[in-house]
Image 1 (tube, one colour):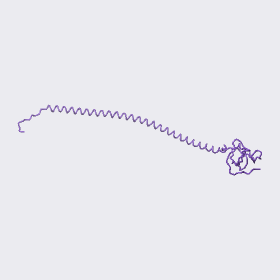
Image 2 (cartoon, helix red, strand yellow):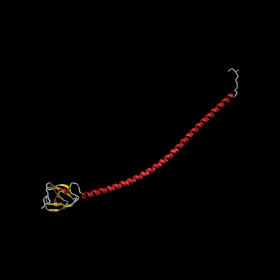
Image 3 (cartoon, helix red, strand yellow):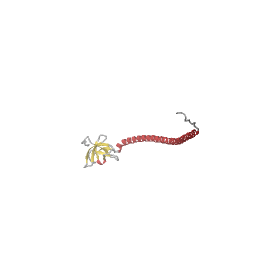
Image 4 (tube, one colour):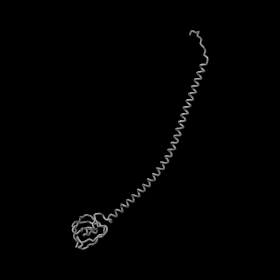
Length: 181
């Protein structure tokens, strides 16, 4: 004869994963077996009989009975956790694929940037070479311009000296001093 449950609001617990256990009509092995509860089944614990070591439960088929307390576990069973774990695995695999695609894209961008960097470094070296060549040409032109100005100044100075000497050598008319003025 089955006992009536003492409390309809009980704590959720699980049957251990590695077995199935018999559900008895009362708290002990000497009570009639009402059926079995499969390993990992989510059950509701109504009360505990510590003297006999049995727990009153309501199983997934809404049957009320007593099972050995050794087979009650607070942790969700593997069977209960498996769908969530599979969903997490699926989500993780999708995230991993997305990350791999992003990684591949970033690696391609890195290769493109490295290629552009090498090209720009080559252009920079070419521009530096041209800059150095143009600076040398400019320095040479400055030297030539200074030399031209120096030469022209020297020629003008020499012409001035020669003209001054020639002018000094030209005889001058003497003035007469007989006039009143």
